[in-house]
Length: 466
Image 1: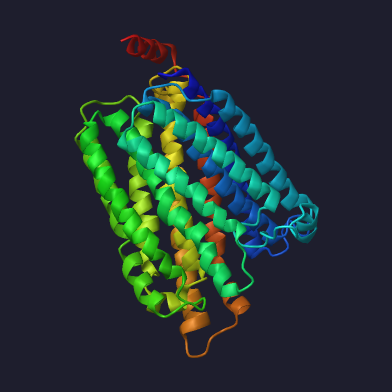
Image 2: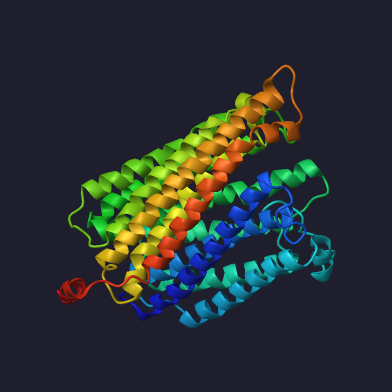
């Protein structure tokens, strides 16, 4: 750790992992509710468990992005963070607000929660992924503004690099597009149109800039490849990301009442969206192959390479499977969508946050890398989580294909619940894979507490001294 203010990142990383565990626990609950309909009912209804699962995902990833920024920006800007105190204050505001919101979902009926939080004054609740009470959304905006001020002032006063400028662009976009969550028009078509300006332009637009910047930073550190080479790759990747991602929003507009030209625009540009992810995969492996040093943090290198591969598979390949309008006509809203969503979020965003945590946490604890025993445990967690996510995706894809065939494509379509009962075996298999994923995550947490032997610790000390 070069700058003392980087220590702020540790708070954010710990909170991110804690909330990640909560998200997966609710994912396992949801998986059981798919096959045992009254599991934990009425204490935790399916709609509430799903809200908690998706909201925890968004919140813990935001904690991860903020922690990553607080760690890498001082190092890139070559100066201390503008205000470590502000970063700590915002952390507690965000954590308390997030925790109270989740408790509100679990303990209060949603309609009553809307009344208690005075949603009638500025109605914003009730939309998928944006279920947060208006007061929570306002809190998120305040935290985002304070965070951007802190990061922006640090960059303005220090060295400007491609990495921190791309990161800042992504973070500004994240904050700006979230403002559309406050716009809730009465017309359903218009509502869904601008709803995607938050949901799509986050995950298939500005978040990808954040992903690219963090991946580039880690690769610079672990490979020793010239910064100029990595920065040129980053420029090309983010250009393709924005060109395809922004207009590719159209693949969500196919069937919501928008003009037909969106079927062409959406199909063409979203079909190109796998290109930047493929470039990212080539980029990561190329940089590691050209490395000038063998970095002791093997786990971080594994996470970095895994991010590129899984992001390409989840966001690229599985996204392409159902992105063309004639295909999407039959597949939208099926388990194929869920398959794509699970692997894309894990590959692109979960793994990049775990990558930066894997690289930065040993540094924040005064080590170049975790001891070899801890890294072995962490790499086991990588393979358990990653392989189980592949199987979750495959099982959901199988369920989705059968769902499309029996419910939508065949000449004699069957009822939704009849089809759900027939494909239940895929949900049981998905649940089994989800339990394995949870075990992998538990191993990841355990890896932070694994101590090395005396000989290994002595070797580490010699390396650090050198």
